[in-house]
Image (cartoon, rainbow, N blue to C red; front, side, top):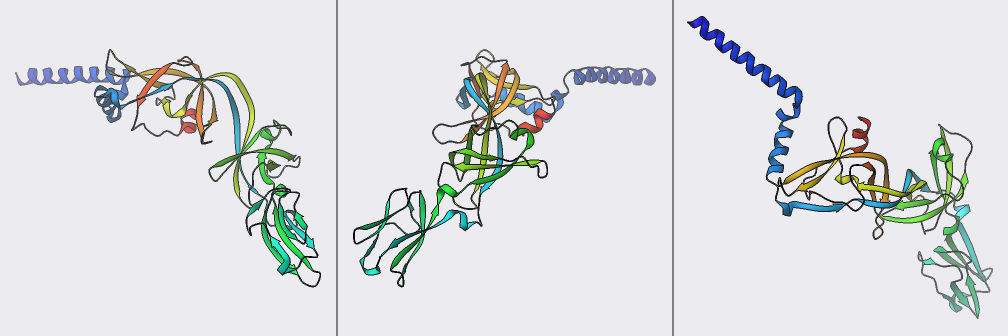
Length: 303
């Protein structure tokens, strides 16, 4: 009797073990805390917690970014002396503000009907009177002589020419820049690029140079904050099911990753090209808060 009971218990345990094994092999995430927490969360979502977003479309740019800085330590290049002859201290009017900016053609000082002007945009660094020569000497920073120097890989340099579009990001601002020099001598596998900024930067100021390497005229894309990944690297976004009253997955096929810029604040926004899964203008939904942070580059590499 005891042997029969033990045999029945062992057979029952074996049966439940086989059932567990089959279920686990078909859906191993079912038994993880993450899966259980996700199901619990989705089953109790309040529609008021959802944020609405749309699938974007239009022309996009593909970019590469590199760090650089404005030249420094070369005052002989960007410091200029401006001289007003026959200037006496008690008869000379200083019109420019010390350490203030001025524009080309602006009157910096005047004496006896004579005016001192600069033919460049600059910043007044200092001034002094030369009593012996009866002259006012002003020292100014010439913004036009300040260039940005950085090093890029050979692959990027080969995609650039002197008409390539470049933007500079610095201290929360952005400005256009023109390429004035593309080097041809390799240093540690990189080539030198010299840029002329269309902004008033200072010697030694750090910048990020964003090079536009291509333009896609007709592209469907989503902001990366609304794209999620499974353990196997498969991408998806989410939408709200009124029938089921929960978030559902919308599988995606991704293309290129790129950055777009907010027209108002100039802030870069990471996006992915969508090859399949959604349509331009489609309305989707996601949780407004609590979205998990993702290292996109690492997840893509696991595909």
